[in-house]
Image 1 (spheres, helix red, strand yellow):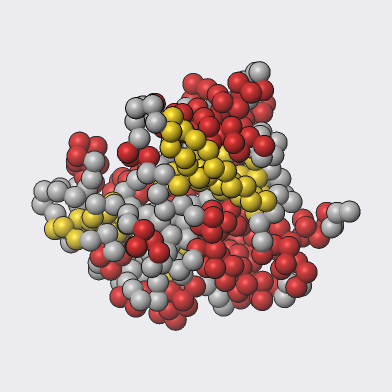
Image 2 (tube, rainbow, N blue to C red):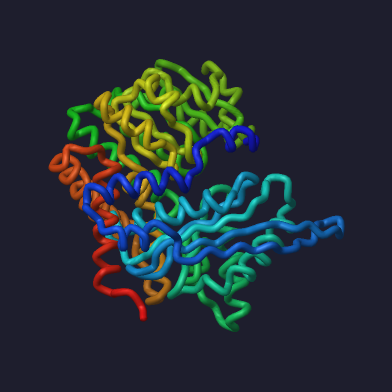
Length: 421
């Protein structure tokens, strides 16, 4: 994705702060507490060299931001993307704080990233970059201080390299330093599917509230990475008609419903959904505007703005991506009666199963997939019910309600702990 596209979007940290202020106003939060919660606690910027396969040296910039750790260790993913900026990482760290609080797990929020296009690196270059970045941020990360996880363009293998690098420095294995690892070195059952499973679970709860049958409902999904593709498969299995999907190369549309298993096979074979037979090619942004009942933004932040919100036809939106909707778009949706299940609730199953993985690593005792599914279902149902009830009581959108639930929990812990010294 070109920088010009990213630069045209709202500043993600400005969006995160604006969302915070709306909820803080409703909570009558004091200015002192707002000052504490508005800013990240720590921001680390690292510039580091990586030796390329041809022997040359290339410099890269990386970040690790901890927003708030009053409820427990910092938790948040690491992304590799050419457009990564400090403000993006700040925003994502803040959203992680609220996400952990809204599902009531004992973590604070963090995020990390390296400004790099990983697709132009060899596997060996990617490993060297990862190990050097992990070493640079090792002053912050640790199993009781800050636990990274996969995010955009990172995966279980990259988490394995980070875990090994940290363990080599410690002199013994520390599996709990990261989550989203391969099962063979302390990963958890259900982690790969967790985000999509949670998105579809809350989507089903909201659809039930709205008396919208899943079978035959038309769904569109922007973003066909891990979360988007698995969500498409789950919705297809539920009998929903997934009419449009997209990735970085573009989108495809079929009003009668796409053959999702075939689309997944096509993507694996070609690297993109584009070119799938029996489907009309459309742009990735057009996927947001096709006629549908349910919309899942699963790409990147800043996709839904005041400019295109008026044209979106879905009745129900569940955010698998972080920060895809601007505050101005939220207001338009609320006025139009479109229900938005916000990112900090809709995609919180990923960090919830990361929490399960961390707990299992710390106690060296692992649960079955059935146990994890049962625990996850309980937490997501409880969180959805808390948010939906508050939204109804306050006559506000679900994002504001979710932020109110989360901010109140973080503010209470901050108040109880006091200001040191």
